[in-house]
Amino acid sequence: MTKSIFEKIYNHLALRKEDLDSIANAHEQIDFQKGHVFLENGKVANEYYLIQSGLVRSWLYDYNGDEITTEFYGDGEILIEVSSLFQRIPTKENIVALTAGTALRIDFDKFQELYHKIPAFNEWGRAWMSNQLFMSKQRTIDMLTRSAADRYLAILKHKPLIIKEAPLKHIASYLGITNSSLSRIRKEIFSA
Amino acid sequence: MTKSIFEKIYNHLALRKEDLDSIANAHEQIDFQKGHVFLENGKVANEYYLIQSGLVRSWLYDYNGDEITTEFYGDGEILIEVSSLFQRIPTKENIVALTAGTALRIDFDKFQELYHKIPAFNEWGRAWMSNQLFMSKQRTIDMLTRSAADRYLAILKHKPLIIKEAPLKHIASYLGITNSSLSRIRKEIFSA
DNA sequence: GAAACATCTTGCCATATGACAAGTTATGCT
DNA sequence: AGCATAACTTGTCATATGGCAAGATGTTTC
Image (cartoon, rainbow over all chains, first blue to last red):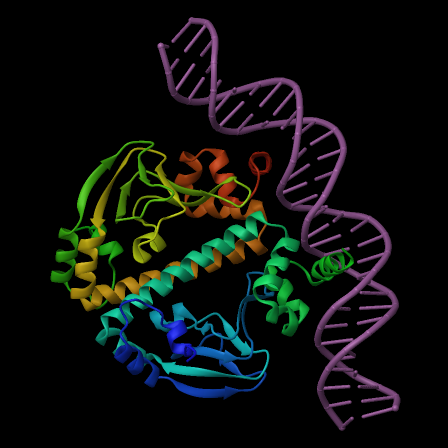
């Protein structure tokens, strides 16, 4: 039998099968259309999602008022705005579906209950967040030390769905470059 | 009476005075000399520190083999390598004192005990980590959207101690630029 | 299916930053 | 103090990326 999305995502040694079942039961499956707004600037996040299919993008305005893509969320990933959800404060992010898809939603209240009831789930949460922090720091270093073309190739390799589904301008702002630069980088890569 | 460093750092609504006392008692004061190694590549972190005075730097090698300064830790900040400490895995970072100073150390085991015993401390931990993640993402955006001179001025404003105490080359790698570029940026700022 | 609009590409030139190397200043060591 | 070494500055030139504007291509709407 294949692993469920729950087993893949809530992957922690100390989580027993019955714990995993309680956790799984707290999720509700939803469908979403292209353009669906999961969260927007000024609101407080009250849930998070496990993406089963489709592609979602989050973005915010930088200090110049330009739209910056902060993340893409695809199949098998957790769609969450951590600081709004866990600090109960309004977000600066906007999270919108780039394609239609399906996901599993869990509300903050239910999460909170399980989080305090199941120590291993609590540990999982901390480990997951540690890893997010690690990856975020890694991303910073990549931005500082690798060329835009390198960064583009890395996405192409690790998350090809983004390249296929997301418009160039969103990828460009995710990479921190202008649309025209990305267009030239693509051309260069193709002709090579 | 002035706030203790514990009140400043472990600042969470639901943390009661008696909880804070248990937490404070789990810390042990230490002195450290310039060059003191808090953690090094390949080891697993077994504690974290609240810095009372002095300046500490963490760094790692990027994929080119160049040293990259990942963070500076000063007075009133938490010196911690989250992913090694909470995932119990070897770190890639090196953490070394740039100056002598004092700190409060808490071991992982003691932390863990309090973390599971005091729900409000657990909540504090999650909120703190959420905020770390938020700041890390903010830093990524800054790196992508602001000029090196801007980034330098931001440090000068928010953490002047770093500019005063850390060698230029460490600041340069933290900003993601070369030593000579930073030297020129400084010159430019002075002459303005 | 044509107009209106958004997206992407390309050309030209400007600018920020890097690479390398030489010189200068500061620091540490005995 | 004097040597050795590390840290910093500066010059020259190279390169990556940005800014702007014109065109080209694709998409939506009525």
